[in-house]
Structure formats: C-alpha cells, structure tokens
Length: 199
Length: 95
Image 1 (cartoon, one colour):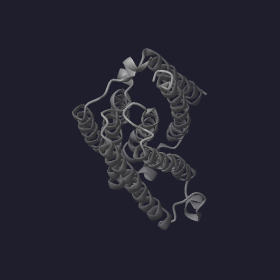
Image 2: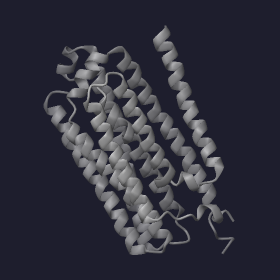
Image 3: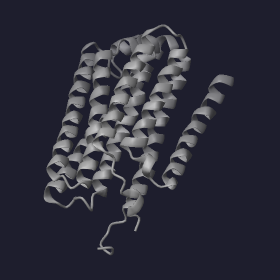
Image 4: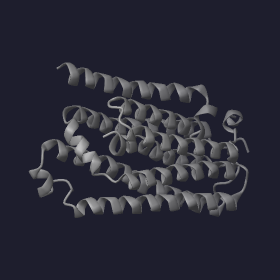
C-alpha cells in the first residue's frame, strides 16, 4: 500500500506553483487595465456603462455556485460517495456550460452593436474606448478559454471517477482539477467589479 | 506518509456557509458601487473582492489546511504581483 501510494503532497504543490503563474498572467492583464483606466478614466467609464450588469452578476453567481459544487465533490469522493461525486461534478460542468452560454449572449449582443476589436465604430471613436473594449475582450476571452479547459478537465475527471480510477484513497487528480476550477472563479471575482461595477 | 495533514475533509455545511458568505459579499459589492462614493467605491469593491478571494482560497481551495510551505509560496506570489503593480504605478504616476 505505502509503496503504491501517490505523492499527493508533491502533486498539489506542483498544481499550486502552476496556479501562481496563472495568477501572475491575469495579474499582468489587470495591471494593463489599471494603467489605461488611469489614463482614460472618462472613456473607460463610458465603456463600462455599456456592459450588462445583469449578465455579469448572473455569471458571478453561476461561477460561485459551480465552485461550491466542485469543492463538495472533493468531500464526496474522500467519503467514498461515488454517485454523489459524479452528480456534483455534473452540476459543476453544467454551470460551466451556463456560464459560456451567457458569455456568448453577451459577446454577440456587443458584436451586434458594432463593438468588437477593430470594428469601424471603435476606430471612429475615442482611443480610450477602443482600448477599454480590447482589454474587455482580452480579459474575458482569456478567462473564457480557462472555463472551456476547466470544463474539459472536469469531464475527464468524472470519467475516471466513474471507472473507479479515482476513489476515496486516490483522488489527488480530482483535487487538482477543482483547484484549477476555483482559480477560474477567483479571476472572475476580480473581473466582475473591475469591468462591470466600478466604472 | 504525508497523508496526516492532507486528509482534512471539509463538511458540506461549512462549504455551503462559505458559499452563502460569498453571495452576500457579491450583493454587498453591487450595492456599494451603485451609490456615489467617488474613488472610494473602487477601493471598497477591491477590498470586497479580496475578502471573497481569501474565502475561496482558504476554504474551497483548502489552503487553511495545507502545510505552511503552501502559504509561504502563496505570499511570495502575491508580493511579486504587488511589486509589479507598485513598480508600474510608480512609473505611471510620477513620470
């Protein structure tokens, strides 16, 4: 038993080190945001008021809820409740899909109004406004890619739980995938006030 | 070998309590930014976001129950980021 036991400490430490690089990646985007907010406060204000607070707030609740279910799935697998683990993971994946659908609606509404990178409307407008929307698409796009990857990873993990490869004694992969998912939530916790609320 | 400290299992009740706190803080941040506070609403929103991420990291991400090494590297990462932000603004504001 002890010889086959995985080094879960090392696995989690490695995951955390990776998550720190992710924090620094998004941190870099937030620095860009704050520098340009400092330079173009009025244009950022006008840009921010065009974002839909209802979409943003709904997605915040969806992500926080998905994080709760992801965290509960770790508790469930450690207690040996396989069916419950699968159920909780399914809800988390469902929340990821709902998040992406809302994001799609939000982006397509903006595209419909002629607001997308390099659109004639933004080129004709003040430079601050086009920078705001470029950063908005960069940040939420990068975050959206993370949501897609997180959803794929959770589906893969759910298959391994179903097959019994991950179980009450060997579950560090599930833990690491949920850590990644919580990071996605963490990033959104900052995107929401910065883009939707404070402007 | 390392299972003693990593085997702490959080109860569903505790996780749900954290989730409720996160929802309450989200409502608070929306309310606080709807009233006219000027620059203070930026700081209020960022302070609430920091509390929310603290809750997510401590409980959902289990950091409260991990070995001290994890928290040390977390603070190294956060100080690095704070250093980047501080350095950037030193340039932007006093150029």
